[in-house]
Length: 112
Length: 114
Image (tube, rainbow over all chains, first blue to last red; front, side):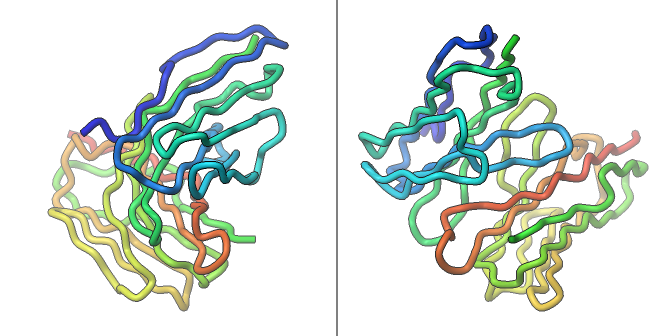
């Protein structure tokens, strides 16, 4: 059981480039979320989804897009990378019903 | 807006000691609270989940308590070991609309001194 899988683990981008961070879960969870973790600020919610075809914005959505075409996958797209998007990104999933959340291993992104 | 605070930001204790980590939150309308462990450069590992109707949860040497009315949770670690060194994060989930979201504290970095 792989749980929540994120790729890539590390990425360096130049300002203005675009890229997609991948997230997949094999637990058939309805809820999936993207967080970013910055020093001294904790994890902040970027976007979330409560099911295939349904997404919504979190606390810090600007500069990011998401889509959820399947239950398993929830990619995060950076449209035009900026140095302020240098961070560690975590994907999480949990079943409906307020139960335990499971996190991926993270993607460390540096924008130069 | 829910705010979650963890104090202290860092803590060092000798091996073998019992210790308590603190988590406080401003909005008591929570559905559950989850404690995580994060090792340097790694992801989050779930330690304990406490539903709002519960007072505490135990797993091995770990015991987490929840006092919703005062907006506080504690994580008790018994007989600490060097392998317990990590950052500990708490997160709360809202009661109603928005319950798909977790609000995190900034964590306590724990160092166990051999």
